[in-house]
Length: 77
Image 1 (cartoon, rainbow, N blue to C red):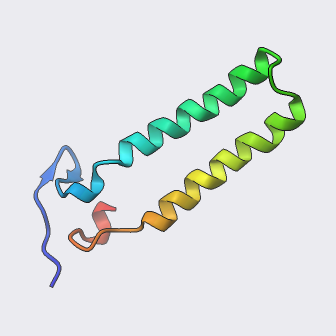
Image 2: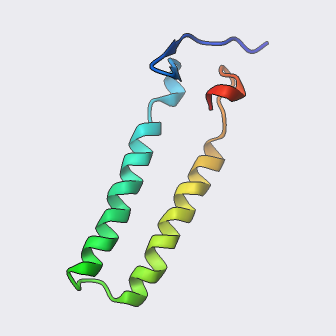
């Protein structure tokens, strides 16, 4: 039987949701870094054309692999 946990701030309070904001923040920092290095001409255009889609794909795969925890309903994940 799946038990629902108390919601705080629109998210389940169980410990398995702790790192979600960190992952999104890290993704945005890395994506911004790719574009900044490209604008500073530290990365070639070809490298930038490969890196930013790769970052987006890895972020999406990370979200898919994490899935939903057992203590929450699908609405929370």
